[in-house]
Image (cartoon, helix red, strand yellow):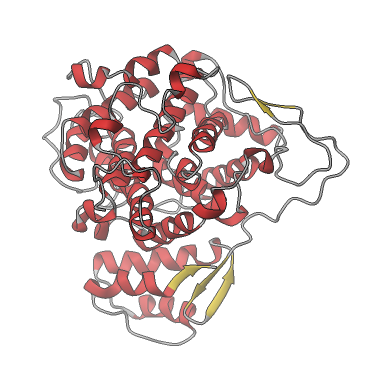
Length: 440
């Protein structure tokens, strides 16, 4: 079955196709982000149309570097991989690590952060036991949770109810407004549909859900503005009504508009980027969906080659895809209480705002798992934690981008491999790096 095919057979994707779709969604997020940053914050019709991945923009990034959208999305993916479950406190800890230390940043630092996300992380640092740090006021419904979402629902795609639930919960860590939570739940359902191989017509049909009739029957209905988008507003409207706004409902609408009106990843990405304004985020949201639908190979090879840390992103995609069978029988309650530790007594209930009630009693907890516990293997060297290799990976890949061949660059490789070696030709560099580096 080809990626983006019209098969509606639930879960019909082969393992290879499923992995391609997960990698495509993560890479689509990153590539869309990297293309869109060029005109980020630029009002429409104030710039020459974007035609390629060129970098620049307000942060002066090199072609292929991405912004906070992808950094946070990779933090979420990393949390799922390293903890083996959906653990909201751990997700927030990683977001804070990005904010304070530049973890999983494309240039080693946090150079941009939304006001709602900043406020939520500040609230969390004052009470690290409560992961519901996102404000719930409707005037805080930014797109900061939608822009990073894909890893959560994709990890649970074989159980659609759970996938949509974790999508909403993922939003609540930083964005608890009903529009943001609803947008993430609906978008999570679209990503599940991509994994199931449904046609674009079916995916964009009125109130599509991988669980038929769910939105009409659930006791947790969509927010009325998200409901309007899910009912097809993106098919009827055009700019300036369609806009690259920071408001989550308009972001969702713009991403679906570009996806609906185009037939390939690149065309849709450029279409949504040229709306301007919050172009990196609307493109990152578009990229998550289009990447899952068209698969990894549907993203231009030139963009995938330029995209920063592509080997690591692909590996994360493979890890998430390989965990799908486990997550297929996973129950959301398994990851609560909020610190993720097993308990003897607990009662979990998810209400219409995705709020967890009946948290565990203090006694009976086992120690929470050590954060960032995964190891990374590069050649014959195994190192604890991503951060031990992060600077070296950046240096190696930076060298690929600008063609360095100096002694300092060779030393970076030597520190990782334990021996002096020459960097291979650019055309083979990322392929080799991808084969050498794996998460274990």
